[in-house]
Image (cartoon, rainbow, N blue to C red; front, side):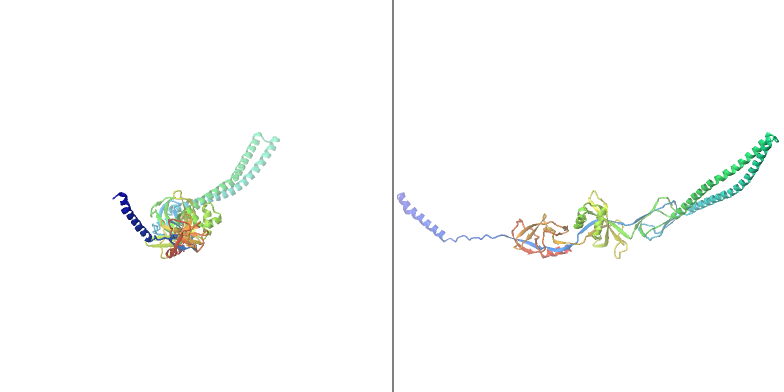
Length: 447
């Protein structure tokens, strides 16, 4: 068979049949299903922003120190004749108790010597008074004798003029007159010195009286008494021991109140002040101004001591701000005072050296509160009424613990997204689930 005949008879029918079968399959095949495009919904957790009042708080740690201390220093030297038996480290001694008495013999001798010197000086002063009377009487007699010598001299001169007596007789009369004049002048000179001698003697008596007062003061200083009720922190003297002047015999810590200097950062302290700092115009952290501002704000303070699983607390008052910033840590000392540090029933005494926590609590400030985790680089994710994502920039007024308080930029009742979607696309559709557990936790932290 020729090729052309084979092509027409065999190949063409096969091709036609295959084309018919393929066309039939295509014609009867089910068309692909059409998928309608829909917007993706992201499931997120939300809470409702609440408006409430939050009390700013600040915590720091420090060591307990007594508000008053006393160092008993001997002002005089001597042998310890009596030492209080309670003068031992840790003992509490009441106000006015005798701590130490030095042997009084040396002081009594000094007093007796000073009194004897005063008596001798006063006797000398009396002797001067008697001597003055005697010299006054002697002066009167000598002046009368001088008058007689003057009369005799005048008579001798008259007789010599009339050449009744010789020159030698006249010379003897003149010599007698001069000798008597010298006696009178000697007595007058002695009387003139008496006021000076009396003044010198009075000054000497004053010196002796000062010595007596000093000796009596030293005798009083030989006894040391405690000016206020305190606890012994150091004792260095024993009975019979010689005590030097200026020697410290004991140190005491007052028990009426205790101070705690808690170290806090300047930034945290500024946060605690909040708007009050701006209103007061306090730009520099001047210690005196800071103390006045804090006290005017009614800052409360609590001192806490960790006792294993228990915590002891004492109410305290803000007393002052330290005048030094630690150059290493950059912290500032806030000093609080605890009254009746030893007198609180059921509480251990606040003794020197205890490491405690101090919490400062400022008056409440109102605003919208959200979880701290919801704040991301100065912005908050919100869900609008249509359930779409809104990125809201905010400026926090207070960041404390796990909460953030804002006075502006966020309305109460806003739905705050607390589980951040990825990626964050403003306007994206959200499926909202309220996180009631987180809401209760937020309310507890704010309160």
